[in-house]
Amino acid sequence: MYDLNFFLQQLSNGLTRGSIYALIALGYTMVYGVMKLINFAHGELFTLGAYFGYTILVTLGLAGSLGPPMAIGLSMIMVLGLVALAGHLLERVAYRPLRHSDRLAAVVSALGASIFLQNAIMLKWGAQYRAFGADLLPNVVFHIRNFNLPLVRLLVFVAAIVVMAILHLFIHRTRLGLAIRASAIDQGAAKLMGIDVRKVIALVFIIGPALGGLAGLLVGLYYGQINYNMGQIYGLKAFTAAIIGGIGNITGAMVGGLLLGLLEAMGEGYVSVAWKDALTFVVLIMILVFRPTGLLPERVAEKL
Amino acid sequence: MLQLIDLKVSYGGVEALHGLSLEVKPGELVTILGANGAGKSTTLMAISGLVRPKSGSILFKNERLDSLRSHEVVQRGVTQAPEGRRVFGPMTVEENLRLGAFTRLKGIEASLEKVFGLFPRLDERRNQMAGTLSGGEQQMLAIGRALMAEPTLLLLDEPSLGLAPLLVKTIFQAIRDINKSGVTVVLVEQNARAALKLAHRGYVLDVGNLVLEDSSENLLNNPLVIDAYLGAQ
Image (cartoon, rainbow over all chains, first blue to last red; front, side):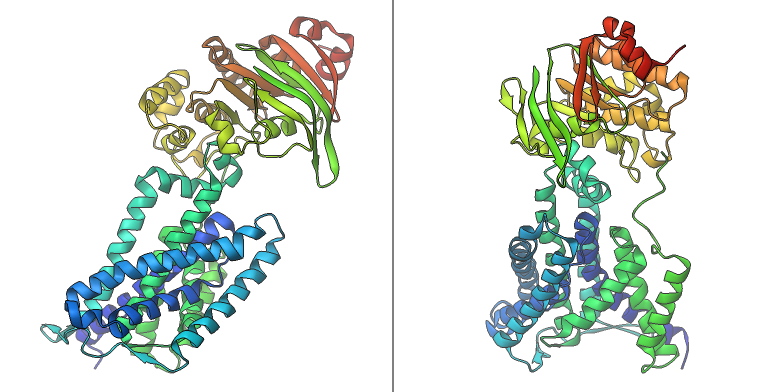
């Protein structure tokens, strides 16, 4: 049973799941990088993305009227935009008024926003599972010898990787990306460069939630069903991924997410499904014991 | 060009500046001297908009800076190389310099060449991470970065701090060149002798109060300054 084919199966499964974790982790790490604040409501923005996708594709029946490829492409763009807007409103309402207050006040506000959003989603869409429907995507499976690759898995993985590649280019090749990195390293010095840090904060609260929301839609497509409290466990795992990668480090979040997904898939395949989470977290704790700042910490040693 | 009028700044109830007034004319190189805690850095931070004054005003070219946000101060042509250099360690030398030109869209390449002309060492280390530079090189980078905005007023906070004497000489020579090229400079220093040799005029602060104000020549010969800041040599 444990042949090369099985390994490839787990590998593709792990990479896909990991790419979803990575997308969510980026939101945590970008906001933390600039604000030194964990956005505890990020998991709920992820859930919101899933439900926006559900509404667009299933309730409004976009998939039926446009055909799957157009509908899914369009729903991705709409979810990115809608959750970006939600993230921006969250920043305006829950964080910006607390800019000059105690760090703890912002943390409490974040937790409050998380509870509020989760309940709002439950009240709006109900507490039961919602199904995306099996006919949403054509049930195509690619066969490469004995290795099976479902179309949906390929789609989720490719979408996540493409979005992350675009983000990487934006952060490293553009003027605004440079401003985001500078603000994460030293806000005071960034201000002395003429950067309006308040705008940078608004920007990361648009990009981060948009990526998280897209991940929510991808989870809906991949697993076929969503629930109002799915943001809790995904949020926790993605947050862990961000820590493992070195919180504040964008490449680290991508690496941490993929690593977490791979660990889970391999633990599931080679050890035991029941022990999957325990095993994963043992490995993650070990990483933190030996590298407390994560695999790719944000700061390099600065000489005085 | 720059005018501080009865400037008071406090941190959490403790007043650090008790009503400072000073003036800098176009093209001047003015130094602010004083011991630790005299309020020198606070003055520069207030000008740059990083701390809000409690009262008093800061005028630059007849416009009030004290109500502006820090990025708006940079847009007016006032930049700073802050205390402790604060270069962006995990970024390359060139990225640091480009950040200095954040408020500008055109002419950046020309400014870059100018800074490399002033500090050839930065050109050699162009693609190196700023965090791996020596202290002197980081200071060059901090000054070069502040020049990238093509400022009319440059604020320098303790550029000689922790540097070997030979490097201090290089840095101070560069400051002289920058001033000669037409940039007005306010230099905060603990190295009083070197600063006074360079500056046209000087102000001496002591725990938040202005105690002396004179031409550099006079200050170098003032017994009070000799006793407190220059020492016997």
